[in-house]
Length: 116
Image 1 (cartoon, rainbow, N blue to C red):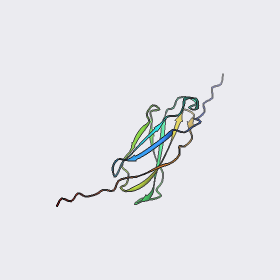
Image 2 (cartoon, rainbow, N blue to C red):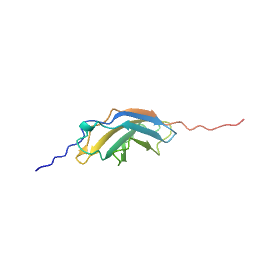
Image 3 (cartoon, rainbow, N blue to C red):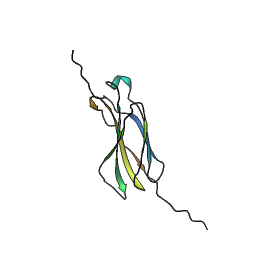
């Protein structure tokens, strides 16, 4: 008997990205429907890249979420007041699934509080 493994047929849906500070972005998404998972989802790969601001067009980075039942992560240690492009995919034992659509968010700009 041969057992074949294939990667997911769909991407995570409803990716939402929101800056929560000058150096962090919260990411959340919905999982893949069961019929398109093609096995157990082992986790997710969240790819992000600065596209505008202080560090535009940097190399893409990846944050791995190694829990297939988790649908959120926080991207940390980002640059201040920079636009980031984020996409996500699910993976199984067989490999990576398809990329989600890209979403963007600007990290906050630090501001100083002046007391008069």
